[in-house]
Amino acid sequence: MKCIKHPVLARRLAAASTFTLAALMPLGALAGSYDLVIDRQPMTIDGKAKTAMTINGTIPGPTLHFQEGEEVTVNVTNKLDVDTSIHWHGILLPSSQDGVPGISFPGIKPGETYTYRFPIQQAGTYWYHSHSGFQEQEGVYGPIVIEPVNREPFKFDREYVVMLSDWSAETGDRIFSNLKGQSDYYNYNQQTVGSFIKDAKAKGFGTTLKERLAWGGMRMMPTDISDVSGYSFLVNGESTDDNWTGLFRSGERVRLRFINGSAMSYFDIRIPGLKMTVVQADGNNVQPVSVDEFRMAVAETYDVIVQPREDRAYSILAESIDRSGFARGTLAPREGLAGEIPALRERPQLTMADMSMASMGGMDHANMAGMDQANMAGMDHSNMAGMDHSQMSAAAVPNNDYAPGSGLTPSAANGGKFLVYGDLKAMTPYADYRAPDREIELRLTGNMERYFWSINGAKYSEAEPIRLTYGERVRIKFVNDTMMSHPMHLHGMWMQLDKGNGQFNPLKHVVNVAPNTTLTVDVPVDALGEWAFHCHLMYHMASGMFRKVIVEPPVAQTAAAL
Image (cartoon, rainbow, N blue to C red):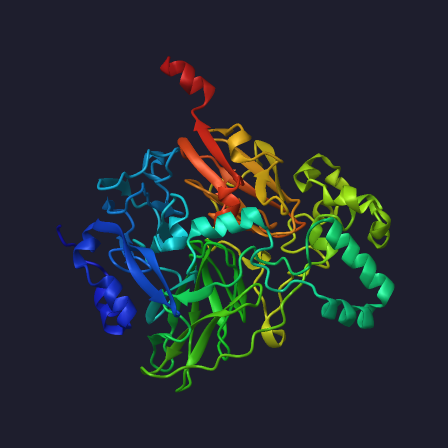
């Protein structure tokens, strides 16, 4: 492999920690060529042993450093006994190189080496992962850092990748089987007689009884925040006790490239004692916004800059949304230091506003206890797509980050600033911003009791592809009819998040659609071919919340070709 000069390599090598140094060691990779080997090996992380899947022997895989404008070649060798793949998450490339078996290519057979080739047309923080089975959960994922051709509109002295993930001693197949057999298998906070007595004292016996009957009839619980609990949470593959550490000198501006590489876990991120300035979202520059805390949906990336001035350790805290644990790292002036780990905050609970039922035609939920519970138990919530949602709070409060009264509404520790999508404004205006040519409504639907997830009430296996025409601008209206958040990911093209900022609406590859909310995005359709479009919660995608998108040439162009 030939070597090329890298404009910031010397500065990074001088400033980087052990983890970053290891990621940068294969200098030949800077020439645009990588060799990745996917294999199995015994791993023990956070005391949990299993035979995991690795890339080049590590979890996560090596950081791939690309340069905007170069052509990259990645040779992926499969040493597993099953097919595998690599998807380049958020990267704009030919559809044949996107790495989705059954859509982009057949997959990589055991013993084979597959070569990906594609140009780098962008810069920023991205990641890569398997799109085969549950291999991403097993360890087949890693970071991507793309250096820009032009100077970035913010300054920093050193940087670190902070890749978050969830780790289980169980295989992905076992977790999915458990969920299909019993959807609340991993709900370790079931309501009990004790909690009933406590609530009755606070709310009154009658009110508490009615609430319990209503939730029971829907086969759901207010504690259904995350589908899977019991994970260990990792920073760059290291547990809280391992204490991944990034070094700094007092007064330096440190860039942290956060990537949520989890299968199922959302994180609320804060660094007590430091303000964070958000400068990129999903690899795109945004107007800087200072925050105390932000939430990362699965598969999102955020770049922030911090400036520690004290001679002490600072904890990087990524607290799971269900408050079951932390992914913890440390910023420190020297090795061997550790910041404090606070107590977990109170576990949130869902409310009726999260159930897409809060404003259903003025329904009085206090009287739900009087309904036929047998009929409610059999209610198929996937069929809610057929109801009149114009009276529901999701439609009444369009493009809201969280529904009014939602148990998932975030708030920063100690009353600080919590980032919401409305804070994100692109650094530069989008050149071809215009009114959409048409609108597509996608209702996010599912049945928690039977554990299947769908779009417009239909699973992937039952649905026709979404057909788009090259050159059009399509508005996609997500209406979340479920009690879960869904991080929706479109391959191959950007989604321009509609938050009322016109040309300055930010471009994202993942948008989080919170329970009982409506969110709209505009898609500039600029990539021919077949693409995946799905919820990035792994087990939601596997059970049906997935679509194929086909981008076709304009009719006139097709006719001319004939």
